[in-house]
Length: 516
Image 1 (cartoon, rainbow, N blue to C red):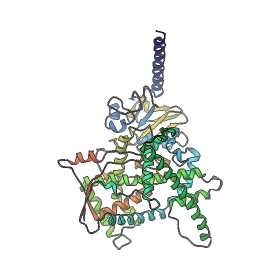
Image 2 (cartoon, helix red, strand yellow; image 1 turned 30 degrees about the vertical axis):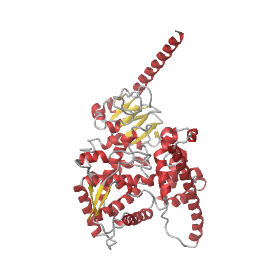
Image 3 (cartoon, rainbow, N blue to C red; image 1 turned 60 degrees about the horizontal axis):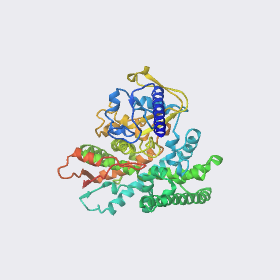
Image 4 (cartoon, rainbow, N blue to C red; image 1 turned 180 degrees about the vertical axis):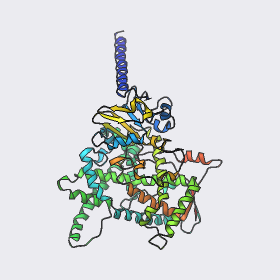
């Protein structure tokens, strides 16, 4: 009897504590309406969880008739404001010292060393200053040409030359997923690493002693990636040392390798240069960002263009017109033509926006905030934590006098999926409409995040993607391959769904290529 009473007393204390914490949190959030899930994870029919942004994207904000709501878990999870208001988002990113990236969000990539993604404040400024010189017009021109060459190599390797039609069960299998510096074995290892970063954080080291193939593959892949990065850094450092002698004699042209440019810029910082650990961390960040995020955006875009052939034809006509008047002549698209390919860019922005949205359906199974990869990938959300008391001016329709007060330690999440599905900004948000982006300002392109921490490689990624897609559309028409009895809406639901990793993408994209 004593033990039953003790257990009952402890249970009552626990319940009372949870009730007290819940009421304290709701008061802290000014009783702002919103979600009250039992737990932050998982997402299910009974529990909104962390995946509600996608699962209930067309219901939650409209239900409360507000663009800024609160999420206060009852038993477990961090209370958070969520906003789909661009005005609110811009206040957050414009506050120079008012917000930081929380520690648990930063920890996702800390295992490889401190880097641009993991740092806040002055340290982030130092990393950004060192990495900026690695992204230059000369590098972008080189990327354009390398991508064009890669496309031609792909045509020969896939046996497209001389054929008028070609069926692909999965276009994803051929979109470029590795750079010239990567071996195929390394590309496979990096793919495993990108899909296992979060499990790697959660699984204890002793578990890798068990004879489980998946754990063994994860361990081998992480060791392979680490070895590759160390060799890459040493090679580039040796090349820089040799290059200094050539430049002292007036030899050598502009640098085109982002890793060498990063290392050179770091060495130029003197006492503020990156440590070996930081070089490794930023090398991993760039390898991860460049490994397959571009290809996955291309996969989504190609899927949509194959489905919406009228939009595909409109974009092709632009490519054809630019090609016929290209300054380079010779029937070749040049990097100088890039600014004129507005509709190609719009198609990619449409695909990238859709990709950031389908990605949210995957992240419903992830710890909160890990989609905030504003440096290496299209962002689905941005999580920030207030460091000082901050008065956030909300939309007037949201009530509470048009403002909420954020106390130090309060979290606020910019919901990019919510923004992309907000009919105030995007009428008919479910529709694939690249024309939304034809004349858009760069500050409105939220798939690359917002504010000072906007993706450092956005121009690099766009240059590569525009080059590949333009060359592809020059030669081929894209058609969606439907299953017997399948409609186009069914094809879209089946194919353009979220598949995850640290970067993310769509399912297998079956298309038919018909030569123009």
